[in-house]
Length: 208
Image 1 (cartoon, rainbow, N blue to C red):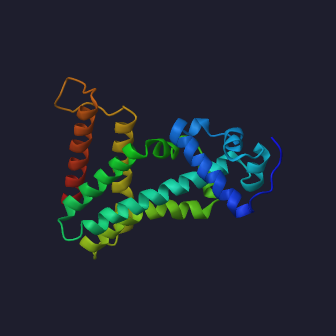
Image 2 (cartoon, rainbow, N blue to C red; image 1 turned 45 degrees about the vertical axis):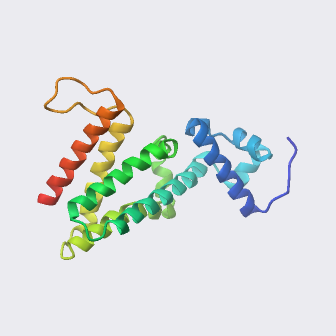
Image 3 (cartoon, rainbow, N blue to C red; image 1 turned 60 degrees about the vertical axis):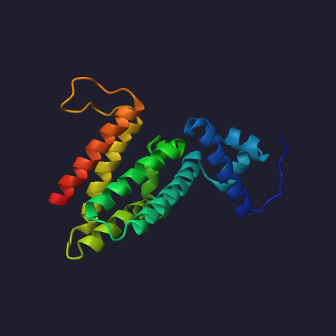
């Protein structure tokens, strides 16, 4: 494939990110390679590395787009739920997170597909993208409990717990209900179990 100079650096960055998004959508993050992106945008693979120093950095940028989209959707639910009881608002936010995990599954799973811990620590902008996801829950807790000095910590604890339950559900590792000896294998059964566990989690949190 011949080298091209049809786009500016910023245009190339957007082309690469859009191509990466499409590749993940159709085949998952395991299909994301410089060669596949190059084929899709009509550039040699080396061009991708001129814009992003590694595929890990590129994936981090794609993940940041996913986090931004998630934060926007959770923010809308937070605004819509104003005026309703705290427990209902928290459950509504949790359900919105589950809906996102279902609708954008390839991108949501890509957030946890590779160990990018060391890289994340060098990219402060990515940490900010993560904080934006916690913000809707933190906003609800600040509105409902303005005198609570531990709102930020509480939001991280609760949201991490909801995420854990959702991840178990999405990966098929959800444990069966305590009172049942029959493992639920249907999608409806697992979702019902997710609902039960998250509702109980939120109930315990609100009662604390």
